Image (tube, rainbow, N blue to C red):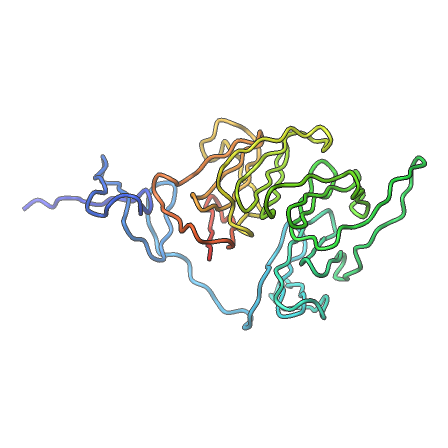
Length: 301
């Protein structure tokens, strides 16, 4: 009997369709109802995922690297990860196991965990405190917000969230925040701040918004999704839109949501990348995300 080919490749996981109803596509390249420890390339070839090797044991969190030094936290301490994967202590005595937000600016790494904050440069952590104002005479007061949770840099300003409030710094002065005027308030706590060329995405516990423009006082705000992002799920790296089949050029942001993996374009549009194929749990609030090649690897709990 002549062999019958039933599988030549896969277009990925499909948890929306009943497994018995997943259609057979032309060329025998199909969705699959279950996928465990596999990766799929752009030619629909499935392969076993790469393995891993234990480098350090312990309960680590908040791993970060953005074209600078790599950092990770454990317990009450921050460590710099060397190229040989050794750990150098940077700071201790912090609030234990509090998730850390990071933001790279040149050789400086800004960080905050709501309770403590600082700036790391050349392996040394220094306080992130209000600086001295230099400029025309002013009656404005400046500070660094207390309780910052998420960080983002856009158009030369540092953006930071505290609960429902989004703050922004003076231009190119991340140590000067005019808290009397330089803020926007949302209806629920902020989970995501993500900059693209055309503005800033802000995700809250209820919805996702886009603030278009480069000058905060001229921002045009619009709601782009009626669902929230999964906190901490955004990828540090961006992806070029045209590389993944988008018509809009420019670097796009990636994060996860309860409705699927989301791509945010430079103009402030969002694209749900897998809503038609994957059902995400609705009761998740936080997770992780990262880009490896063109694979957006993410998880949630």
